[in-house]
Length: 113
Length: 114
Image (cartoon, rainbow over all chains, first blue to last red; front, side, top):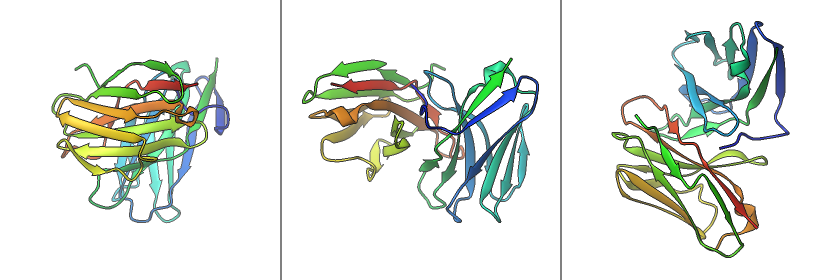
């Protein structure tokens, strides 16, 4: 697999710093959101999810924040490591009975040593 | 668990040829999704199956594309005839009903049509 390439927005951070990746969604009916990480040559990998009845959820070194008022989602990565370098996608469900996910265009995270 | 398995990993073919991509979902997962990823369009859902039945194929580009799921452990995506604009990475993903919306992706098949 390969992530979307050269035209992605890119976030460059120093190793050890915190990273914040943002995502805007458009469907007010969406009630479930996921962050995926895609490393070069691989398929997207689940990181963390959040339901619309929550505004924050924490995992290991990652936190997802949801602001339904402005339809905004963010992924915070604490103490960013070189292994975090990848493309990050947010995805939302359709808010209906289907199991479809709609993926954002992605953000490339580069971690400087 | 072996994860979602896709084959081949890379496929290079000439325009007009038939291409068949294969996917084995994670055992116990009963929803299967086919996606296409390109630089221009990002990650697009082509079709998804639930319990081997196609539920939504609205993302399939045109009649040249077809997908089947003859049983719970195997699915194919076929392109006939292939065109250069079909060049992309094709992903298969699966999920288990009742476990939120999380989908597990395979490693993808990189298709190049010359």
